Amino acid sequence: MTDGALTTSQAVGALSALANEMRLDIFRALVSGGAMAAGELAARLGVGPSTLSFHLKDLRHAGLVTSRKDGRRVIYAIDFDAFNTMLAFLIDECCGGRPGLCLDAFKPVKTCA
Amino acid sequence: MTDGALTTSQAVGALSALANEMRLDIFRALVSGGAMAAGELAARLGVGPSTLSFHLKDLRHAGLVTSRKDGRRVIYAIDFDAFNTMLAFLIDECCGGRPGLCLDAFKPVKTCA
DNA sequence: TGTATAATTTGACATTTCAATAACTATTGA
DNA sequence: TCAATAGTTATTGAAATGTCAAATTATACA
Image 1 (cartoon, rainbow over the protein chains, first blue to last red):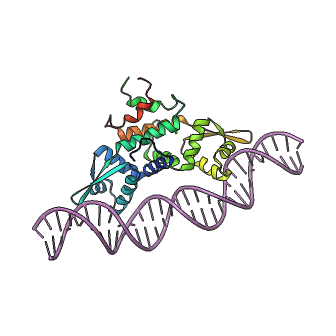
Image 2 (cartoon, each protein chain N blue to C red):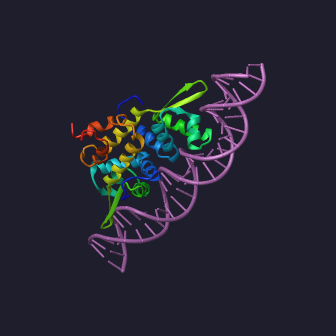
């Protein structure tokens, strides 16, 4: 997921990865809690290790999270660049050519008043 | 989908609706081509009527598109408010509390220099 | 070395999703 | 009223997805 723009199937992959309640919870836990080990995620979300691993693989395959080994643990983290790329896809591909229609959502985070 | 904020399961519903190549194509066709009848969508996308109807129902159920009858045709259109609400959810819930991390995606559509 | 811990992988199973055909409903217009 | 058109709704079967328990790999440490 190093390219700037997503193909349709990459976008579908990223959307699919977030289109599941448990994976969305995982994603949000990593956003709010920062990078953490699989075991800590499992404890926070009350999920068994294999089920968690299954979903983490999905998120990682979609490029939305990264993982690195630290001893016998595996630390997961959000890939914010990839997430931004997905947001950019939604904005460009789905609102492109119709500026103004999709701008409402951005106002809360605009910093240029 | 008249409320301002989405529940998690509403967000999953909206994401799931877009997490399919054909539905994403339908959505984009409606964005770029504006409101149009199911038959015209079917012709543009080269899809059978029942398959199209199946996916349109999905998008409508997720709240991302609206429909109205016009004679014997049914006109479908993007519900941009709902789409904005979904974008806002992604931004608020997934980047909230970490301003700056998710701002990159907005720059292309910023209108304030 | 032996044991416990952290995580992934595998396999069985149920559920959901998707596509395609055929049947059905509603509307138009000859 | 009858036939054609526009869409939706069953129905079927195939493929993908999700859950859980058990087996496996890798690391740490007594």
